[in-house]
Each structure stands twice: as C-alpha cells, then as structure tokens.
Length: 593
Image: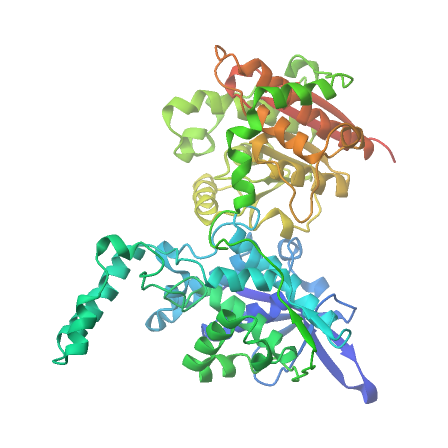
C-alpha cells in the first residue's frame, strides 16, 4: 500500500498546548492529496519545531492521518527530502512535482470515476520534467516559494512594496500566447463556434460580426487569436493550478487583492477564476491551513520589469548558449590561451589505476546486459565498453555492506550490473524520469535482485548516506551535483561526464568550480570552454582534437575542486577511448581526515 509522508513540526505553547507547522511543499502536497480524495495512507512525521524559513500552521481536526517519529521511518524514506511517497519497501518518490503527480496517478487507480488524471494534461506530461531542465517546473517548485518568502518577510516593514520578480514573471506568462497541444485547431473551433452563433442571429449587427470574423491567415496573429489563458497552462485545469493555488491563497492573505489587481491583473483574474469556479471545493480542501488575513496598506506598489516570455518553455537566456556564438574559433582560442599555465595530468589507461579483472559478459544473464534494457544493437558493444570501465573501478573500491548510488541511472544499465556482481552491497538507482525507473524495475524484477532500491527524484531531494557514488554520462550540471553529494559525505566517486555545453549556473551551483579556475576564467569564458568541449566528433573531424582539450580542461577544473576538498583524484580516459566521444573518467577517494 502506498503511503505519503509529511514532516510536521510540533511547537509547544502555553499550558502544555501544541501548534503544528509544515513547509509550503507540505501544504501543497496535502492540498493535492485532499483535492484528489486520495486513499493513500497519510503519515505525519513528528519533529521538534525549529525556525523554518517558511512554515505554516495547520489544523488537524479534518485530517485522517497516523503519527510517526523520524526514527521510525524506513531507511529508504529517510534518504529523501519529505514529502515522500513510498510505493513499496524499495521504491520511493520525492520532490514536490513528482509527489503531486504520483498522488494524482494513484488516486485515479482507486477513484477512477473522478477522472483526476486529466490534471496531468496532454500525454500526462504536466510538470514531468525536472526543475534543472524545465523553467516551468522550477517556477512551480522553487521560484514561487522564494517569491512567497519575500512577501511574508517584507510584510509591514516598508511603505513601498516591490512585487517579487517571480510574481511579475507569472503575470507576464499569463499574457503570452498559449502554448498547448493543437492550439490552432482549438482556435479554429472557437472561431467557428462564434461564427455559427453570429450567423444564427437575424440582426444586421450580428451578420456584420460574422463577416468580420478573422480568416485562417489572421488567426495566428495575437490580435485575433481567440485562445487566452484561463488556467496556468492554458484552457484546462492542470496540476500546475493545484500547486499554485495554495501559494496565492497564502499570498492574498498578506496582499489585498483589490489593491494589487491593477498591478497584477492577469494573476488576479486567474485566481478569481479558479476560486469562483471551484470555490466550494478549493476552499473546503484548503481549510486545514490556519492562516489569518493580515493586510497592510502600502503607499507605493512597484512592478519590476521582466523579459517578455512564457514560463512554459525553455529559458531564452539558456537558448542563446546553444548558438554558434559560443563556438567562435577566436573566442575558444582566447580561452585556451588563458589556461596555458594549467597542466593536464592523465592516466593513459584503466589498468594504471585498476587491477580488477575484466567483466565476464558471458556470465551475466540477459536482463543484466545492455541489450536487456532494449538498447539498439549498434550501440550495444560501445555501451558494454563504457559499463565495463566504471564497473571495474567500483568493484575495486567497494567493500561488503557498502551503499552505492547510481545517480541519473536511466533504465539501470550500470547499477544493475554492479548489483549483480556485488550482491553484498546495497545499490540505489536514482532517476527522475518515471519511464526509465519503470524499465529498471522490470529488469530488476526479472533478475530477482534483492539488493536494489529505486529513488524517483531529482538530485536535489536526495539526503541519504552512501559510500560510493557513480554516474555514467550525467548531463551537464548533473555531474557536478553528483560530485557535490559525494564530497559532502566524503564518499568515493566514479563519474564519466557528458554534455559539457549544458553546464550553467543553477540555484545551488556556480562556475568555475575550483579556486584556480575562478582566478583565470569568468563565467562567460567558462561557458565558451564548455561549448568547445562538445565539439568532440569522429576522429577525422578537425574540431575533435580541440574539443577534447576543452573537455579535459573542464574535467581538470572538477578534479581541482575535489582536491581542494581533500580528495585524491584521478582523471583518465575510458578504454578504448573510441567507446564514446565523452570518454573522460573522474575517480576520487577522500584522503584528508
């Protein structure tokens, strides 16, 4: 039976009475849980009250739940940030959007007549992308919480109120052209409906209106386009609205709607729309939240300027990073010139570091092989070579009883082989894609492996302890997040990076990584280096040699960063180097006690 775990902070007040407080993520998870009429078992994990950055008092009267202490949680549940959903003893889901999606899917299974699955939108893809790659997911998971924190902390402190930038971005988003599946077909249908209504009238004015309807060529212009935002993602209520409603419900407890309606008219209209249309349902659903109205009269309200783009697409600032401007030869030459004093120290082959014998592929069952994961035949040999490189290193580093995390595990190619060859170790497959996790679970089930657990979450939400962290072709910033997790726990790491051109600043990483590179390169120059590193093509391409040099410098920066944190690190090539264009391998072991 699935279970939802919510962290509740218990505060002792006068006369032995208590108040109960939760994070914003927990408020949203509870709202989603109640809106979907879910029958998932609900656990409140009791913790002593501490000064959370943002917490809200809740009432327990209308909630059906069970109390637990943190020490009583299953180990796998404790390895992720709450709220968490456990599907089984070896499968958990963490992260606001992933948990909310799972609540909807599980609720649909038991309450099929409710049709809650519609909240996941076209192809059930609403908020399916992780916040590292989707600006919309990041807005719903991170940015809106930051904006709410600004509103609450600055409340009553100044006479002039600056609307948080992320609120202004959402206001701007609601004014952009709608980006939904079959949007032009929907527009045509709306216009046909209007024409039909006009033509059915006998008045001259109505006939005139019908003749003035736009033709096909005008429909694509914003002036005549009939499809406007009603909900956060377009014409239909989705999970995004379910997540954002509690945020603005709280927001408008501090900000007077009437006072702010002129500054954020589209947000006000959206909020009134879902509040009015579903007034009884939404308000009854959120009645567990104990928050008083607390308006403050501001003399001045300022709206910040934001760029005009929809939040429901990739960040335009990141888009420019993919243009050829980042791989102009003159720019790459200038960056490489700045790095002439940095030496690149490579091990020439795996055998110089590792003495473990080669993997006997014939001894592995089919479902442990790459082909068992539905890998195309033309990629199977090279994938075996990649996996063998990392597997041999892990076998050499591992001790019985170790916990090994395969970060960004995909469908489990690497982690499953390690689990089969190291039955005395516990393997965690950490992946944020539902489809990939499901494929990995099927393979593990066929193999009958008992030492594998599954964590469906982003890297941000992992909190578990482990001895070895591995990643094969973790994309862009993901490799640095993996190394960050390992360094924080003084764990060994085995990382083969990928997608150097996708390296970019995110809310918890900055570049360059090492102090040495920070003294030599600015961020812009580092991004040039990253995009140059992605020019590793076939051996005959004139850019390949240069691409490898750039790639080696990026990984040298990573190596130096780990050394600054007390690690012995080896940077080497996979064997054979032709098994993948992204053939660098970073192996680190903490050495300074």
